[in-house]
Amino acid sequence: MESLRKDREEPSVSARRHRLLSLKALTACGGTLLLLVLGLYAFESIIRTNPPLMPAKAQIRLFKDAEFRPVPDPTIGFLEPPNVRGWDATADFEYLAESDCWGFPNRMPWPSEIDVLFLGDSMITGGGVGIDRQFSSLVGQAFPDRAVLNLGISGAAPNRQLRVYRKFGASFRPRLVVSCIYLAADLKGELQFDAWLKESTKTDYQSFRLSFGNKLRPKSFWARVQGRCFLCGKMTELALRWTGLPDRFSFPTGQEVLLDIDNLRFFAETLSPQDRRLALILDSLREIRALAEGQGAELLVMLIPSKEEIYGGVSIPEVLEQDHTLEQCLRQQKFSVLSLYDAIATRGRDQAAFFTHDIHLNAYGNQIVADRLVKWLKAETSKSRSGFRKASSQV
Image: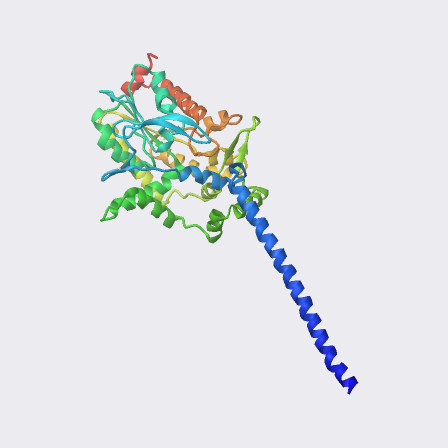
């Protein structure tokens, strides 16, 4: 009987011991998991509270998400806020932001006659540098007897530029019209505004273009994860950097320019000469040229690069192929073209031509553009086709 009792007790003791060991193992695993979660949370908090540690995409997004309240316009989509005068300060810059009574980057009053009219998006509006240091003003300073007007507006691809020209610039009968193309935004912008024009309800264009852009290039699951988890974004950034996809460009001075990896991927895609986006841009430019020439003016198409093309192109040359395709198509259709890619790449090799986070040209970049355009204008004086060129020969 005692032997039988012992046989019954031993399994019971063994089972209890097994359960105890299992409980200890689960407790240890739970503790380890808790420490891991707390560690990840701590790392995430450290990254979020230290901007220099954030992924480049997150740092850039902070600038893109800045508050912007445009004024709706039934023909142009929207205009910039008018009569602005106040200091704007960020981690990249501090400058006096100004706009005229229509929201364009000029001071009032407008000249009664215009020699050079600039059309384009926010790359020409002097964001971060102000009116006096934007390249259109620098060109005006080089030709003090000529009147310059800047009709730049955020997100203005050539189809919006055409409408801005018709509504605000054509009545001045300018002698030279400069359409500035920023390929990083204009391929998408041309589609957005074209779709908005065809929409019967004509919803708010700012809201429309943001939602259209998300539909046009929807974010992947992992991209959405990176947007919420900076630690995941940082790990992805380091992995991509190891594979040769740069997230920043560093200068000997220690200065850095952050690059948007999504833009690098976008530019690495092949742009066919038959691409609908490119066809729309060319159609709009032909209309701008017809309007200008109908008034005795000339059209110059000026190609402004993005920082991803300039600094990403050092390690990924294929990001420059889209611009080459556009320039070739423009020249085949007999447009006057001035590409700023070589000038900015050359002079921006040892000193940044763009802000660290913000997408726009800094003061040095604006000076490079102005110098190149002034050189072009002076070289064209001998042709004497436009009144501006004839007058500029006196400078």
